[in-house]
Image (cartoon, rainbow, N blue to C red; front, side, top):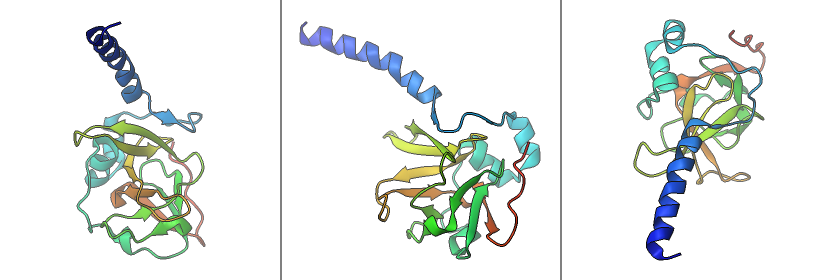
Length: 168
């Protein structure tokens, strides 16, 4: 096989694989997935949260009150109320967005996004699919990961309060 044939074969293969990757994000917890239309979500959520969660918008850095949240508790998805992060995994990254070094088990799903012309790992709530943020490899030990989250995509529940029921 010459170089031209190899390039044609590789480009054909990538044309087949990339759409599969883009449309099938890895889902750690597919059971119990919540299905709602964008119209339904837009009536349930404040406009800024809806735009981030279901239109992949990004809130302005430094604008979230959750940046200053230091209490013991749980950070839940603002859309479906699935617990996503324990406060013990939150740290100050200096980025202006709430950051965590580890999610709760089966809480998130990931996919690669190319919105900035280079690949980034985007993560979503594994239950409702709401966009939360991006994962970077510059976090603290033990994972070395930074889960950089949009604050409007989260709600905080102090440890001494009961977690809300999952939204149906």
